[in-house]
Length: 162
Image 1 (tube, one colour):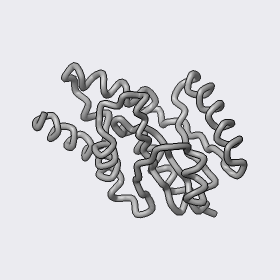
Image 2 (cartoon, rainbow, N blue to C red):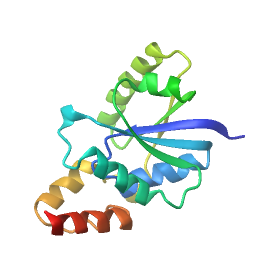
Image 3 (tube, rainbow, N blue to C red):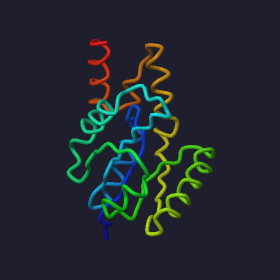
């Protein structure tokens, strides 16, 4: 039995193969997956919210039940607005667990109907993070094996325009 809506929130700066793996696996569990891209001005993202949204849409275009949106404000409020009862999060390393546990409890305190499902990455994606991709990109290193092909082409086009 599938569940109606799962929200996969994040900064996705940029969206990686690890993120896409979680989106794919979530799309098999939920009728609808909402990839919610946070403005996250405090994280000082490299890519604009419009670019991050476009990269996510390009990477997920083959998933019929995945929608990408940008959001600001509280995640618990976004979940209420979309009648979602589940958040989707990834856990790569032990340090992720402590942070995610705290955020899960916080979101649950703000919206008692909200629960969080945690995915461990597949082994081939366990080391990938957006910050690693940004660091490699900053030094003109190879990132094509770390991000979905449409995201790579988007970044490559943008780099030529910059």
